[in-house]
Image (cartoon, rainbow, N blue to C red; front, side, top):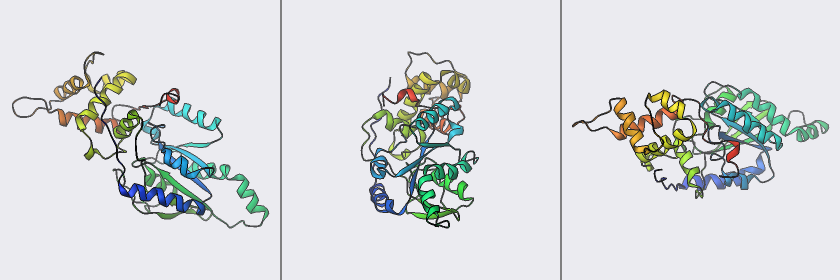
Amino acid sequence: MSQSPSIQWFPGHMAKTRRLIRECLPLVDAVAEIRDARVVLSSKNPEIEKLIGNKKRILILNKSDYADQKETSRWCEYYRAQGIETVVTDSRSGKGVKEVPNAVRRALKDKLDSWKNKGMTTKSLKIMVVGIPNVGKSSFINRLCKSKKAKVEDRPGVTRGIQWVEVDSSMELLDMPGMLWPKFENQQVSEHLAFTGAIKDDIMDIELLAVRLLETLREKYPQLLKERYNVEFSNDESGYDMLLKIGEKRGMRISGGEINSERAAITVIDEFRGCKIGRISLETVDDIERM
């Protein structure tokens, strides 16, 4: 097994986001937390959990079309059993997004009933939307609001400020920038975040990252790996040897005939993130006690 990359990353704008969340919480009725369905545990920001305290929460498992459907269903059952309103979405296609307002209203039923009894029927719900970078938060907001008001880019940390976005006359969203936390205690968490693109690639050793991803996929989804690259991988070969096999199979060579391992690494990571290897969940409910 290759050495895990040590990853620590907490830019100044993320410290600012933590402060903004704390300051804005009194303005909202609930918090919608978006996570990546492929890495449900790793995309759970412990800082956010501490900040929101007892505030009502709605959990949104996004990028579900990239995740293993069976495992996503198990995650839903787990969180719903704890009384947490949980919705599975895919912001690219819009799948599941329209279910979110109903989940919000269920979570805030007591407050809505109280408003109704007081004759406050025109008051709109205010929901803070939080999540780690590159979890698809802005795409989700744009889908829900049927607009392009939230800036979308396929790289972490693009939303820097905060903005209110109206869903309809009964609901407004407060879009917060994506935020990681100061220190990753569990290096597997940092790996999974790096695999999915929540951590900027330019601070990573891209070849080491691809090596660890290949070793992880060999353990969890060996058949998908074999089918995608049409290569036999033995259990005792290193992830780097696996990477070289893929580079050779794809004809990725540089002058002198040497295999271009960096190009192969970029390809593997891009194909994982683009779901070309298959629908993959790196974490399951069974990992709760371990991670």
